[in-house]
Length: 154
Length: 485
Ligand code: SF4
Ligand SMILES: [Cu+2]
Image (cartoon, rainbow over all chains, first blue to last red; front, side, top):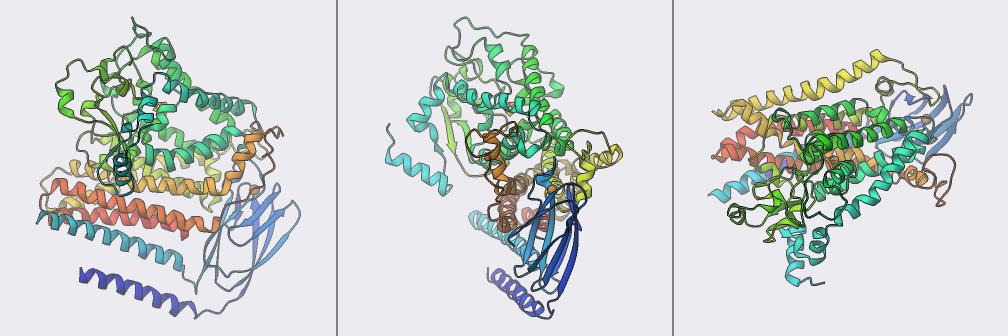
């Protein structure tokens, strides 16, 4: 049992060091991103920035009117044909945020989704820690059940 | 009403602490309810009303999915309630209230509620061919529907047509074959309901098996004045799994000894049941796991081009125009190839490693089939995770269409104009990862116990399970990547 807790402790420390260590090396920048909305996608579909970046979206539609909504960032704009809508935000929250169309635009409208990913210093720590978490939960579940059954038998 | 303190204790123990089982039929009200002959009719009837409404709106309403009740009620409300609540908590309770087979059943029974004294079933009453007494047809049906799912969940008319087909098919089969052949062997929903109900925290079982063995008249199968006997071809006395129990409660009505219980129990118990494990069910598990991943990728991912492939009737305005057949074939190939080929073959590889690691003398086929059942909790977790944003993001479409079912601009209950407001969408990915991790927990717990069934030595069981652990963790990380990566 001691070994297991050492191993868990070590991984947590290791991830912490990674998060604090690398997260600060990168300086934030300003980015301008052109987005084209059409039935039923945003292009580019995946936008990856770093925490602290100032991001300006310039959104156009190539067919009907679409909405431009970003989860958690309080962005919701209507994009009409011929218009270019500009939105500027500071990417202060990390993680993956879906970009959604907020105006019914046709059959697949609810699936018109893009992704806005805010990393820290070029690394997606949310995913990294999720993966580490999954491995830890998996391995410790197995060890726990194996030990318990083992004790039960003995 | 007489609920005793000991009953409350038993209920809490079983429900919250997973200690032992608690028979819900001990509660007088529930027992009286399910024993009443009018019970099933009474719960199907309101549901039937919605079915007609869904078919009507499907055929005559707006072609825009999220403005049409057929789409919002079936693919948002029903789907979420089914997969996230009904199946994990109440097994196949959906089948209790499902209207699809009701016409056929009423026809066979020549009535809605009462059983006639000189009852003989109407119809040819044939028995189902032995060759098809498995869930392969359900696997096939589900895959076919899944291939067209992007159309199905976005085009009201397609939903209307499919529902109508299912009702007609169920009724026609009821004319030729005895009882609920459609439900047991055909219904594409029934296939995954059966598989996932193995995980449910509820089960219908007999209290004392010996009593059944020595009771020769077996009213639960044959029926009696107050019951038709099981329409699902099950015998409660030997039932160890939920898979084919549609919770119609005919056996409760029939049993003269009150030997039937509706137990609260621990999650995933049936996965450890040694009976009934078969290749068709293994494949069902592969299909369900694979399709959950593909659906998340296609319907919630940022890759528009995959949606273009899936959307075979591409429609600039809302009509139909057959377009991009080659793309669609590619897409269909992806669905069929991964769920029937790639996933099972990969899993076979991991099962081979299990065999090699443990130097087991068991046939590979045995390990492959048995271990496949460990995928059920993870697959269910993936489906629930997939379904969460459907409700949290798009709930407003459901209440909008309640007031305007056809999308014609009505406002019956004043909920038409409620704006689209996702509920804390930024937390959805974390919730999804959490639910998949809970699924993983149960998959590992049950998977290791499956392994222990084959290896008396715990260390061998552990060795055999290590490749399985890798597979389960790998799949969970893939899902996590889709949610937060
Ligand atoms: S098996 Fe299918 S048709 Fe039969 S009751 Fe269940 S869901 Fe309805
Ligand atoms: Cu749109």
